[in-house]
Image (cartoon, rainbow, N blue to C red; front, side, top):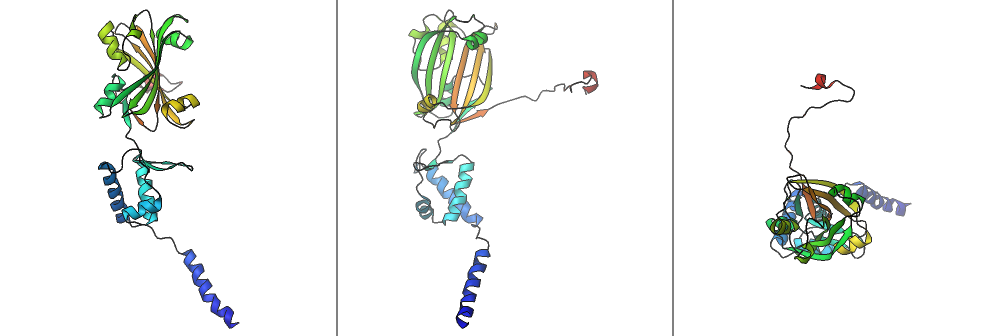
Length: 278
């Protein structure tokens, strides 16, 4: 009986200890560790794509506990500074800077990249003639089967694939285009050699999943999210001359919209419009 009594306090103390709330990392320590890690990234000690190492290694490097480190990593992951890849070959990596794709400005992608400090690059996968399918024909206002210039390219930012693009142009408007260098801006080529520039551009943005071929070309996992932008460009005279389909890596791209809040009449269905106007 005495032995049982002797064991009870220890068991009771252990049980009470399990009921105690876990210590919450000091917010000051979290902020200090976050700034130290950001300093390593901004100084170039840790570069985009670098693996941060194990939690144990990184906690020791920052002189914090692993619970504090987890909070730091959660904050940085939410802000897009780092990215976590699950699986045996995964880990925590310094994220690449995102390209800001501003849909309110009509500029070729190489110019976008240069303005943001990236080194622009292009890989031309194919440049051929093809017959217009129903979708391309409808957008370009040409008969189905009409001859189109069909160019497929991968765009690079600092040597990393950022987008897979396909541009289709009426062949009769741009004779000899396939003989020109296609590694830069198509808009610049059309302006310089044919005197055609976009006056109105209509773009549609959707989310798509990477097919096996697209994933291999863009360096992402199959079914990874992509930003699909479909674009139709027209001249000042209203003639459509470009139909494009771009697939941007969602992990490397941010889309910006600039909209003016002009006053608009709102009409509720089934209600007299005059009564709804204020």
